[in-house]
Image (cartoon, helix red, strand yellow):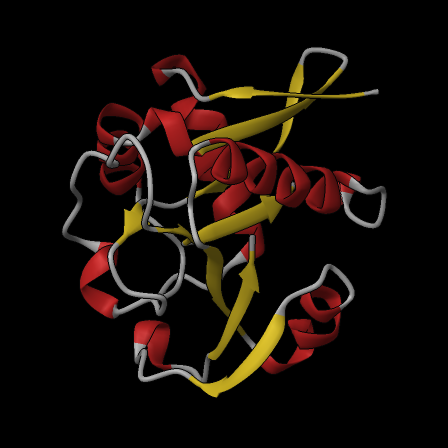
Length: 161
């Protein structure tokens, strides 16, 4: 069974390993970025556990605009109590646990938390091969993002809450 909870600083090393498995070196958040996210936005950073082992993560700050911009990968502010747009900068699942519903459970959880806090949308960027996955979860493809993160083409995906 998948258990989802808020992140803790002790999770850091396991989260970095999962992130590095799921993203290229250029795309993956380094340890110091995760450390800052754990400190600043623990209310929108969640981990999935199976039998006490961390198998996935989802995180991102609440932002004022509906689309993710590259400055979010380095600039971080405390989330507002309510309103705004819940961004998802990272959704990653350990390779051994992929295709088992972990990513879907994490998406549902962050969406439930965002709704409870009156957020307008969940917003993220993804590569072309994941558009279908997010569309299956109710996201709308809003076209190519202005993001140059990791040197690849990203697509804006938005879900109204």
